[in-house]
Image 1 (cartoon, rainbow, N blue to C red):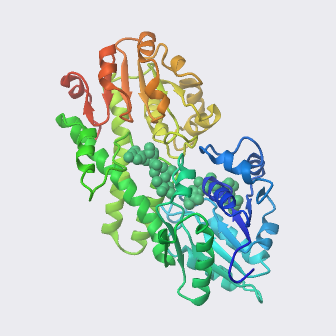
Image 2 (tube, protein in one colour):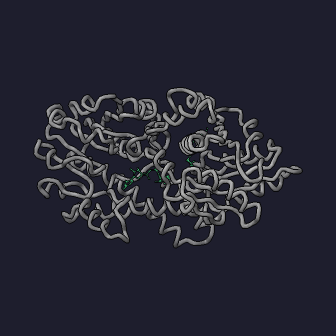
Image 3 (cartoon, rainbow, N blue to C red):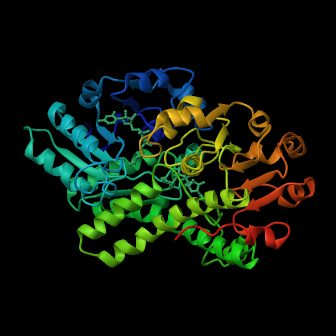
Length: 481
Ligand code: UDX
Ligand code: UDX
């Protein structure tokens, strides 16, 4: 490796984070050769095709500009490690499902196996960058693995460089980041490595936006940022329950508090609860860390953000059941939206999954429509053992359609679960005409024109607001304790 700059990058893990980040780096740094590697041959084949494994607006354009020039997708992990000056580790860090820390701690087995692979095959000096979200001190563990497997002349310097991109807006987030965070050790080799990584980002990010910290601050900042963002959603969702009980309107409250420049107006959209691969996982990880550090009060504080989110999902499902005269058994309910948010096909921890689960538990018949999520993905999510103990029940109760009008045809109710823009422009008169009466509209994303729906004849229920006569809302069953 040149001592002052990076010519070749390897990224281990061709997921949302690794694939998107490295495509942007390749585009913005034409002199750097970037190879993204993955164990999964099918995934790599997709990256090498017209149909990328993830849906992210603008990504295919960038991949097509660079693929075959300075951007490569491969399963030859060892060769790519050997050639690289700098290696990103972007493998997934799921919540543990067994053993110590089950349900809370991050499973670092993929990080560790990537680190061991690097230690085994690297034959020259390299910078190893932890891109995956990890618990504080993971970089220290990686460094220890390297130190214990040290080879003559092979120095492996570990940095932390968490990614803050959000799905659906990943390309814009990468091109215009609020900040790039780089953590490293306070040694001359640590500073030199941070400088090399910083120079990559400086191709398109102003230097003032690149923050250098110690490794632990960098690792903790990523968990803290996600915890703070999720906390805002749980805070506004807590207010939404108060709004529904009092006649206040959560959108008006959000606007009123958001105009206070100290609070700000972002991440104050009340919803049926947050989803996605990061918020819950990272908070659980933070909670586990606090418990391990003997800080039970801090752990309990952050745990409440998740508890409120679970309550919000349950509350929305109960609202549907309560409004439909306390029974949804054998009733047809159209679920509009299955992705965890708009502009992505990702369903990880999507609130829709839990709404469907609660309604399936009551033997409702669900017809699900999502513009991007495949039928296979929907059924596999609903058949997951944590959601359904009997997969054949899912086949009996759930159907998936590619048309929102056929989803609502003959239904007792529809529920908006993802805020896809196209749901704003559907022909709701046509939908109403095709539904059983009374026709119920449940807007879990506070997305639709409720007065208009009410005028059409729908009974409208939304988050944080009472639409139409107030008694209708109060008639719903309170959630169980
Ligand atoms: C994100 C973030 O990177 C991470 O911070 C967070 O902890 C989990 O979610 P993401 O890119 O969304 O990761 O994950 P995913 O789409 O699952 O991609 C990870 C990739 O790593 C997969 O393609 C998987 O096949 C690959 N992988 C995993 C390897 O190549 N080697 C392994 O040992 C394990
Ligand atoms: C998040 C962080 O935003 C990102 O910085 C980090 O790198 C990964 O985790 P992501 O999970 O892709 O990104 O999506 P985000 O836009 O943050 O939304 C997460 C969930 O919160 C979604 O279900 C979304 O619908 C919900 N949400 C978001 C709300 O319910 N209300 C809001 O005001 C904002």
